[in-house]
Image (tube, rainbow, N blue to C red; front, top):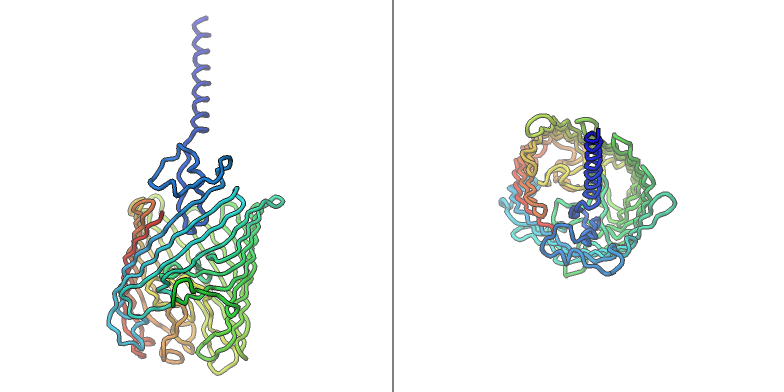
Length: 469
């Protein structure tokens, strides 16, 4: 009997010790290093205040404590470098150009300083220096020798049961898949906005209001980018998370451009915009659906325009390489009556050209785009995507457009609706947590609508490496 009691006591003692050790291990679990975000200002490096966090070289610059008692008061430095070699044998399908195939490098360097005070105030500054050596035609999105990319003050304050956030200054704004409002990461010079931004988060809800002057790249000398009241964009946005499904978002916004030029009309462009989006996942399905309507005026004409976008897919999780079969369907209105007083040409606002391809052959204007794709996870760090896509014009009365909204000369009112087919291959390799490599190849076979104005089949290839610290 005594042996049984002794044995039971030993079992209880060992169980208690194991539970205590498990609890102690949980309490003393080593925190992970912070993730490096696409938006560098969203990072929190205060975790490096814990001496148990695995260290890396130059951590003394990633976390510079400024308060003995508050680890959330600190300064952090960071940098991004992106180098991409591009080959393009026919910019804008060669329409109106006699230039030979081009091969060049686009180089982007960014450096940032991020000051946090007591987890309530943030001052973020980011400089950029962008060059395109070897590129024959330099556009505003290609080079900006040295300028302020972002410089803003942010305040975070609990309010009621929610959290209020406010930002003022030069910053980057992006919504959702960045079809229409983006950071413009594909080209060399990113899009910045001199803006006021406020949002309030309460449970599953988020309310956003913003007003901005989009920044214009001048690149005559250092620190000469500017914004003005001639170009403005602002609005209100409401988001709602739906448990186990996804998110619904809608926003009303206003766009004004005092120096707008379209094929049939020029003047002050004023567009009121309504957008609604539903995105989510369920089992192995994923989807992202968006619709945008635009009404307003330009000179003496009315504006009535629209666009839709859909990206969806199914992933076979139980199969080797986890193949995802995807389908992308996009459409945007064109101007159906060149002699009337209603402009139907959709304005893609501030699009991310990479949403279609990096090649820039396609603008989100007057087009219909159908793109099935197959994506394979070749390893935990390597993915490959192959796609074939067909494109049409929404109306033959309007032009064929390249990125972002450049009409091909001579295509308006001439040629057929079908504009061509392209093939795309993209491989992404997350080599380390700091280095990402990518390859993208696009072959676009043009239809008669482009051939008749001197356009030809076009090939693009890009090889990219990104380093983030």
